Image (cartoon, rainbow, N blue to C red; front, side, top):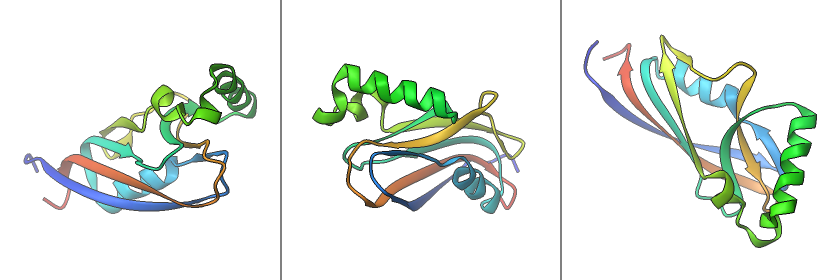
Length: 130
């Protein structure tokens, strides 16, 4: 169980557009399904107007994030993916996502376009089936 392996999973999420979607359970589900013991998970999107980040999934904080993005003027100019980033790296320890207390992995969709959004999860580490 000491060798490192790399696994890549593509996931599609339905989005109404202009929203924040909690991805935490989807990421956790992939880690469990692939029996990852320890390593890192990179969650990435190449969708225009979409970003992946870590935040407390709480209505007031999400409203503050929206206000900040509006003040920066990035929503109308599609620069939010530069401000927020298109990816996040999450450590996995003993099969568990190592997130901060109350933190969630989220897709921030400022595209204002409904439809399917594509994500890629790259898992590098030690898997129990190796």
